[in-house]
Image (cartoon, rainbow, N blue to C red):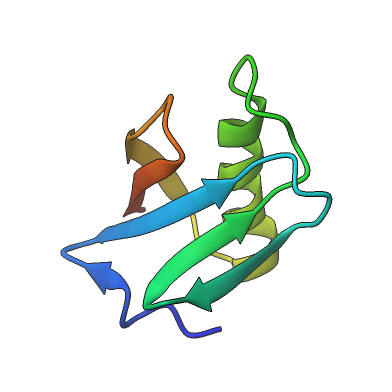
Length: 77
């Protein structure tokens, strides 16, 4: 998936769907949704999100906003 059209000023907005039983990224209704296996407890889903981008997409990111929300803003490193 080409994410360049979603990256604005080095930032990427995503909606995270924790505990979904799969790990994938999809474009739905003009926005990116990231499905993760990890539950949203003790930062597990946040760590899984960063790992997912690095491992599956080869993009290093850090969470800038939304540490406790499903709506996140990531900074592409």
